[in-house]
Length: 298
Image (cartoon, rainbow, N blue to C red; front, side, top):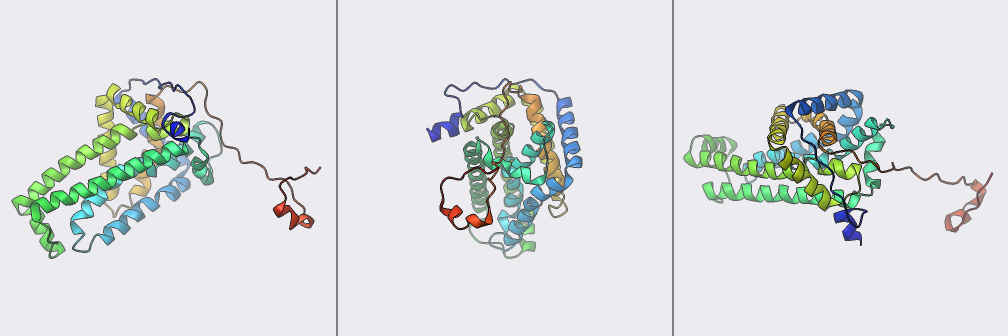
């Protein structure tokens, strides 16, 4: 029963959400709304996303050892593959702001109370698996061109990369394969994570809805993928620090793109409300710790 809920959500016979056709102008509007959310909640967004570029800096610094040097670029490029999962808290803040609810930074963690948490974790694990497979494939491409020997130095690695036929073959093949991985992630995560925050539909329904959204809007969604790739590349230039702005804007914009692509639910889910703890008198300690029933007090 738990596995069924993760895959199909609360309903025994899930209904697929209705997909709209969108135009490039909708992408511009989604980006504008994403920037507006970032301007309204900058401290929240930076708090959520600063760990993303810092993690990138850490991973790249660990890769500067000569043995791991060939994976430095695949690691940096692969961050985009897990971006939809990294921005899950931003989707939640945009959802709350849209609904007129409190957007304090603590509410970004309300995702853990979502009835779709199991499905969100499942899709997140799928993205992590794709990221690890991409790293394995990138290493295999390097090995096929240069063998198992590690680069002698950073300078020698740059010479081998840009001044040999094997290096250019590595660049061309690696870029092509990386593009296919990026397309795969775009197709399965274009609207899946925002949909799971908005409705308890399950991982399978969210995945299928994202695929349907891309199939219904191939040119527009391809343009969206190019915009995301270009902005992430721009944000990565100053030691990934630009991602503290680019990531939150894209995260908020993705929520508004979801709103344009998927018809709203006529029965939105209720928001999580923490249970109020009953008032306890100090004299009740320590018996209150072991009691299973508590009387209400005036």
